[in-house]
Amino acid sequence: MHLVIQGADIETRDLKELAKLSGASAIDRLSATAFRLRGAKPADDIAALCSKARLDFGFVPEGRKLSDFRLLVMDMDSTLITMETIDELADMVNIKAEVARITERAMRGEIEYDQSLRERLALLKGLDQSALLRVYEERLKFSPGAERMLAAVQAAGVKTLLVSGGFTYMTDRLKTRVRLDHTHSNVLEIINGKLTGQVLGEIVNADAKLAALKRIAAETGAAPAEIAGVGDGANDLKFLAACGVSFAYHAKPVVREKTTYAINHTGLDAMLCLLSAEQD
Image (cartoon, rainbow, N blue to C red; front, side, top):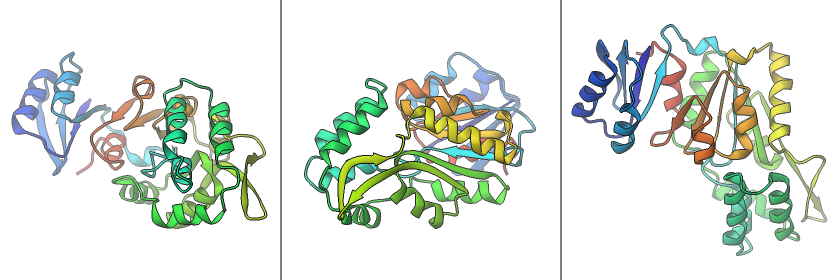
């Protein structure tokens, strides 16, 4: 196994201590923000040291290659992009704090997702559809490292699926913008140019995200071991559990506890060093 250490500021003394704790045989510099400790073994104090030094870490099996994966499944809000779309829509009518509180409770798994979405959308009833374009053009930003990660994954021939409790208005545009293969999200009902506070069809909740993953996996012939997934909230747990390798990205504790890796301090491109054992 290799132990990959990633962070904005990696001190030599921390690397040496981690190498000692893990019994690593060598330290390879992968980049200014990533190092690989060869022949490492798990040890109880590694997590505590990395947490104190604000470093991300993960054990990677020798021989793993990015091209071993056939499908990458991603959440959108606060994962692929930095914002929660529905919170930014609420900001257009000065109720962001109220909507964000509901969003946060749903992300932590404290309230059922369908209920939380209905409550939030009801508060947006009557909002002009032009707000969607404003949010997309003025506020949507990719998470750090997202575009680099996607480019590498696509170059390796891995198919991409974006599953979101957000809205097709955003996912359709992202699909074109960064050449995603598949997307699945909620369809907002809009009548006479105004949001009705409802969605068309079934709500894209945790079960719907998992169903979309299973459908695309079957179409692409991807076995569970060939699927990687990344998300940040409780609504992502079911699809992440179906992935051979799963990532919690700047996530809630309930997600960090149930995924293969947690990325707490670095960008989405930190996934690349964990999906391939032999990065140079």
